Amino acid sequence: MNDCVFCKIRDGQIPSMKIYEDDATLCIMDINPLNAGHCLVITKTHAATLFDTDVADLQAAVTTARRVAKAIRSALNPDGLNMLQANGPAAFQSVPHFHLHLIPRWNNDGKGFDWQLVPGDRADIMANGEKIRAAVAD
Image (tube, rainbow, N blue to C red; front, side, top):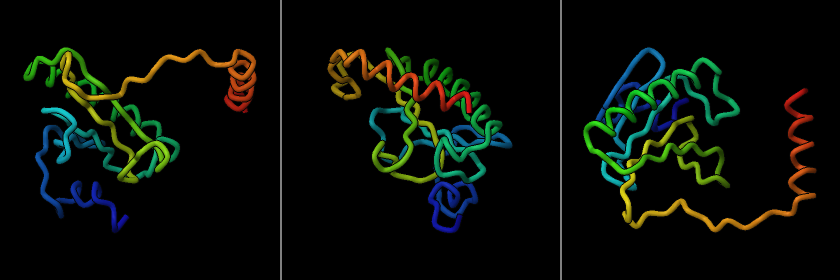
């Protein structure tokens, strides 16, 4: 993928602060961090979204995320950690290359991701669940 910023980082065409690298993944510091220590785990094989990514690459990404999350906990001692992954513009995916955000969180850090719990319509929940269950079986 010629225009992919993460592929360019992978290939050394764009500088980055590398945290960890193995055969399938690369972990770098996010240049637009939500909080101190915000990292990105990137698959080395280009795939735009979760839907396009090979299962082995997904497994490698989660394994790397766990390894780096433990390092974040050890190095920065956050109160919590968000692992975030977005797919497509509607989900606010800004770089079309599969990646995981590891975001250290501290109590009262003033950052978001919380939403109001509003009970859904039970009939809609059940109907959508049936549609999804049928699609999983296909």
